[in-house]
Every structure is written in C-alpha cells, then in structure tokens.
Amino acid sequence: MFLTGKQMGEVFLKAKRERFGIIASNVVFDTQVRALVQGYNAVGSDGLLQMSAGAVKYAAGASQDLHTGAKLISTIVKTFSDQFPHSGIGLHIDHATPNYFDFLVYCIENKLVTSVMIDASHEDLPENIRITKEVVDIAHKHGIIVEGEIGRIKGAEDEIVSDTELYTKPEEALEFVLKTNVDLFAASVGTNHGVSKGENLVLRLDLCKDIDDLLIKNNVERGLVLHGASGLTDEQQQTAIANGVVKINKDTHYQMDMAEAIQSYWEKEKYAIVCPPDVDAWDYVPNKSKFDPRKWLIKGENKMQATVEEFCRVVGSANKSILL
Ligand code: G3H
Ligand code: CA
Image (cartoon, rainbow, N blue to C red):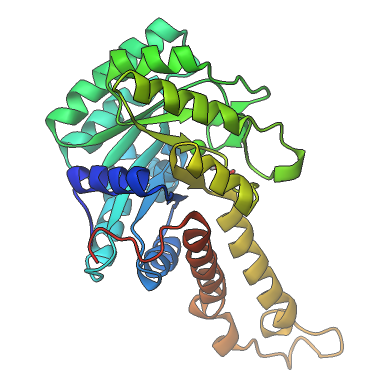
C-alpha cells in the first residue's frame, strides 16, 4: 500500500526503535517498480522507492520535463503498490540539489512523494542549513518528511559526482539537525556511489554511532541514512544499523542485476534475433516468442526481486511491516 509521509515516518521510527534498516531502492521505470514492490511484499517488509532528478528526466522522454516524469513514476508506484495491503511503500526524491528547489516544492504540494532529500552538501554549512530548513518548513506543512546531508560521498550517481569524500563531523551533524529539523540525516562515512567493494572502502561506521549518540544526548534523535550501500558487505550494513542507520540506499546493485540477467538471456538466445553464421539471411526467421520484450525484461525483474528480498533479510526488515 502506498504510504503517507506520516506513515513513512512511523516506518523509520519503528526501524530505529527495533534496530533494523529500510532498503531505499532507486527506480526509473515500471519493470523495476514491479520487481521491488513485489519483493518487499513477499518478505513482509516496508520499502522506499526513490527517484533521482536524472531518473525523472529520463522517464519524461525527450521533453525531459520534470513534472511529467515525476507524475509518471509516482502514478506507477502508487497504482502498483496499492495492490498489496500488507507492505507499505513510499516514494522519495533522491539527492535534489538546490537548483531543483522548485521541483521539490511541486512534488511536495502535489503529494507525489512521501519524502524528499534536499542535498545542499556542496554548499558551506550555514547555506546548507538555510536551504534545507526552507525545504523542511514547506514539506512539514504538507506532512512530507525530509532528508538532509552534510559531507560528500565519493563516486557518481546520476548528476551527483564527486572525486573526493568528506567525512561528516558529529558536532556539525548536531548543529544541522537542531537548526533544520530534518527527519532523516545522511552522513558521509566513507561509502561510495557506484561500483565499489566493501573491503576496499575506508569506512568510518563508528562515526554513525558518534553522531547517533550525540543527537540522542541532545534530545534530537533521528534516523541516519547510508548512501552508496551497494558495495557493502552484510556485516557492514548490520553494523551501520546497530550504530543508528535506518535507511540504506541501493542503486548500482540493481542495475548490475538487471544487466547481468538480460545479458545472460541474450547470450543463450542470440539467434532468436541474429541470423546464425551458417544460415542464409533469406532463410532466417527471427523467433518472436524469444524477442518479445516481456520474455527478456522478466529475467531482470525476477533477479531484482530476489535481490531486494535478500536485502530485506540482511537488514532485518522482513516481517516488520507496520501494516502486518
Ligand atoms: O541513493 C542511492 C544510493 O546512494 C546509491 O548508491 O549506487 O552505491 O547503490 P549505490
Ligand atoms: Ca544516494
């Protein structure tokens, strides 16, 4: 079922109290939405789908119109997830930089989403606080929850690119949360966006604990967010959750799943669409029962579904839906 912003807040509150994580999964089109929502539902988990500005532009086609793309993705997510009464699904805007301020307001006012991320982390701290607070004030009036970030995450995710990482300082995190009143706080602790391997990262998961402890001590406890989580080991994710993380962002892993599953299908079924070298082109008939897009897209869809089910088990959200 598609959740309200308030219900999504309850999901994160329950996750924080019971120390489990919610997998936030990036999507662009309906095949991915189906895979993920069915996966969350299959294991009795709530889940968050998220769309980046780049995904929204892609969804809109050649016009790249943000409003069209967001309405399209939101309609798909809401319509599809409403089939499942025992799994709560939210939709989030991932990494909206300040140049997307008007877009965020449009999505908030039109209730296209349950939550948004304003990412002004490339600004200095006072400016980041000023912009984030402006978004929080608007979003809270409409019952939408907000994620903010300090620090810098290395790697590339759509339009967000950084060659360096900048670890979040706990005292700055406290100042940021106190002054902005964000609901979710994204810390930069050494994860990378894109293809990465847990054992090669300089992870500072201890920083999550320091930030969590400091926020609790100052009566502003929040759920922490871990970006760039595709390359992390199960144990690293579980440590992050024990240290206060409630939202674990995944994108690259699903992209690889889909590409691998479809690549292996076409390796096997190549001659359904390509004339074999020993057959005369005049005699060759492509095999419609194999190249129908449903036949190969479903391979990617099934793989993504199995992956999100496993992710939910790893982070402990299976059978923890607020709707169960
Ligand atoms: O917001 C999405 C995630 O931070 C994406 O990171 O591509 O490493 O999974 P990932
Ligand atoms: Ca991210």
